[in-house]
Image (cartoon, rainbow, N blue to C red; front, side, top):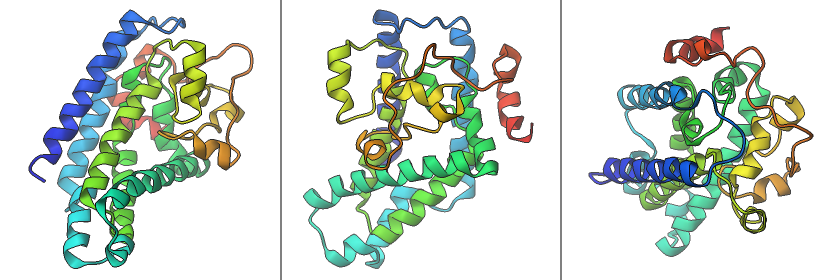
Length: 257
């Protein structure tokens, strides 16, 4: 627990810095005229969300896993699985959980209002990967806490998942160009930026596809795979593209619009 925050923050900062550099060296062709003017509001959202979680929830997911382990409750604790099985299994099961959570946030109207803040980014780069409304961040943590206890997941597995989730969210939103052959090869296993961009299309039928965060398997398995957008790709949400709507205050209040 003493190392958790350091590991998560260090991994987040390192991956974000690497992707920002990659966006300069091998940029995606689509122009981003707003560019850095979106960065601080986007990063501000995750900062507010982190503070909200820290001061309103008694435990985060990793701490909840420690508690479940100490109490001997949860499926994996009952099965007494070895760590070499439990850690990768936790990562896969939680990735599937986030896939279905993502689908629910798209199809329940009041949850979509929260999640729409993420989709309303008129451009797309690594910082879009942390642009989530604080209430959505809070709800997601509550869900992860509940599943961490029910699954009896090892704390090491939850920590690994949290680091992987943050890294893949940054990566799949990054404005980088990956050679087509490499992108196709990677896309059989993980969600690449090119696969995820269709999810940020303004067209509803394209937005409601490609819900995966880490593994691309779930979209193929559960029928939400499209593969490619139609015609020109227009990012964002109609009516929410203006620069004055990209401030932290406007994004915090956007679900009330």
